Image (cartoon, rainbow, N blue to C red; front, side):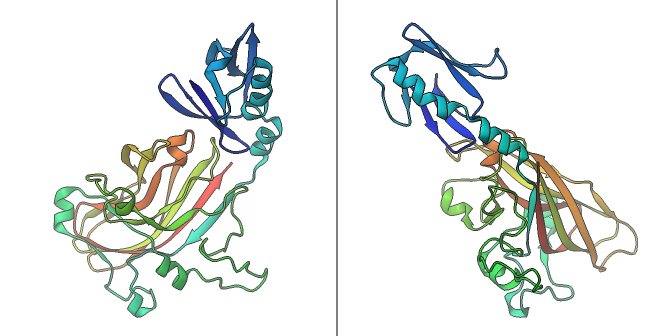
Length: 307
């Protein structure tokens, strides 16, 4: 059977020929006798389903007794010109959080001199990308508007700006409650084990560009140290199965002679494209790798979506 299901105003899901795909609403159906074909409205070579008997289709769980009713049902599921137009017009936006779980609650979530997350010699030897988790407790403590004009919305759980400035159609860019170990109890070796929270990409559109500015202090413990900030990133399929894990790295930062024990502020930008369901469903958190022991004080993330 060929199963077609509405996902949202912009896309639909098709399960056919052993594959599950999410497609934008830019397709049409064509009838020949009692068979129906689905192909792109904009690219004649993009044939999603060749001519197939109408009784092999279901649309949103419904089986149709004749091809005309099937064609009518498919028309709004496969194509929505207004939605495609609005998607192109959709505005960019951003959100910011300082909700790192490692921030010290005993000092009002403010890093004190010399404190931080230790990147140890064991981490160096293992070439570890240390992943920095988020938490709701930290979010509640630190993501509080500092302005009165315009009045903050008062919406909790979204970020510092309380939903203002988000891209259109996006409810939040951060998930403070995601627990990787609970969601993946048998997982090992992904680098996300033990992590909490995530940068949430589920409301994005195909074609969006993700930019993450990671703000952090670093305290080198040894001179001539190089760190590599990155977005630790796992693609996931539609069933939340990880298909690939890798660091999206920024330019390495070098700390030469005389830097040991000093504190340095960094504001590093990392980008990624959003072009498939595996990107929209991806897991992402900031991370750092170093060739010598360092102390890291994660400060905040500014996540921007460009359209």
